[in-house]
Image (tube, rainbow over all chains, first blue to last red; front, side, top):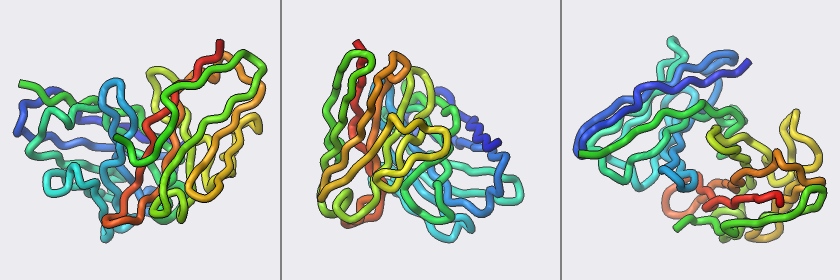
Length: 121
Length: 111
């Protein structure tokens, strides 16, 4: 069965960096577009970034552009999010999610359990 | 402020029907497919509806979706206490920069 397992969250000071990972299993990872989506405590969903199956096409939300970098290693069935220059408003649970189609359909059929990132001094 | 507008909360009694609206614009709902997600307390979101009105396997037909112009609607019939959750609509927004947008979420209470 499809599984997405995030890791790497934690407490970091403003201005600091963190790298999130998402381990995928149960499907052909290299076929699918993947995204990171976050949810601040008590708030709604916010899409963060998209990466194509090959990694050649990437999109970012304006709120993280220039600070976050999405990447993937298809040989390791893994998705990553490098987060730099972190701000208090980046505090959220970060979900890894698979796009339903073998394209950027904007529809996410599988989600991980999430990893909490807290930015605070 | 979310790009897509949803009511913050809706409520209905067990067995009844409820609808949740999602309002957008021509750059998002008007020209793209809409998805709906259910988020039970303390869990990750789950895909309920995709391509405006299609259900993934395993989703009961009590859940339905529709779209008209720049608005979409999620319908739930035969409400159960287990349907108490937050519901989110989502779609692409093809304005200045391509991005996925979500509604602010609607808390469903089954009285």
